[in-house]
Length: 315
Image 1: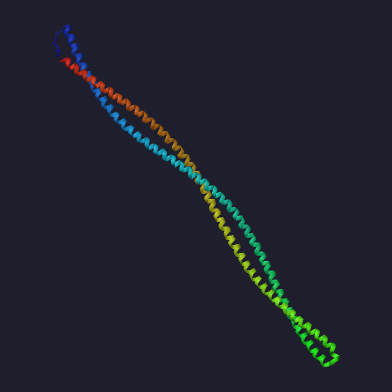
Image 2 (image 1 turned 135 degrees about the vertical axis):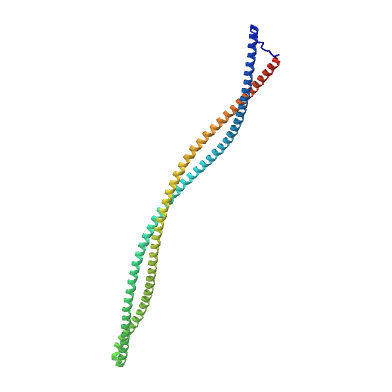
């Protein structure tokens, strides 16, 4: 039942006026409270949706962070393998340089030995040439001896003829002439054998001289090739030094990159931990918002019930 203010100025009217004004103020306060509850409830529901989106994004961020962390670990492992390979390459280059030094030293010794051999070949060639000259001189002497033996043989033959004419008086001279002729014949035979031997010696000396010349030419060619090989080895050594320097730079760069990736990996793990913590806090906040929404819903229902109850009392 509505209470109407009568306008009378007595104590009952004053109380009645106060009650009417109190009810009006209470209704206004309750109405504003209900609207505030509705606004807070809507805001909480919006916050709840936002937190759900944030939580979903954080889950995705965590997954992406895990993938990045895994990729960083794999890349770090690959960098370590590259560093190991670079170190192994540097070691192989050092070993190769050591082998190169040994090979270069052996090549230098070979060049010196070939030069010594060439010198000996040239000296032997000179000796053989001198021997050939001496053989030709001996051959000339033997020819002269052979010519003398021929003349002696003719003289002995003529002496034997004259002794035969002289009869018994020339018998002794004939015997001597015959001995001289036989000696001349043996001398001719011996000089022929000597000439044959000398000719063989001359032929052998000539062949040896040609062989020495060929050996000397071959030795000179070996020296030239050995020197060219030495120059090529020097170029290879220079290239190996450049490769070694590059390998050292690569190893240093890889080591620095490894340190950077290790630091990045640590930072990514830190971000992952922070993301995990944020996700946990978002979950807690979502639960809190759920509870707040529930409590605001209960409050809004109570206020609505209160307003309805007051409305029925007023009626």
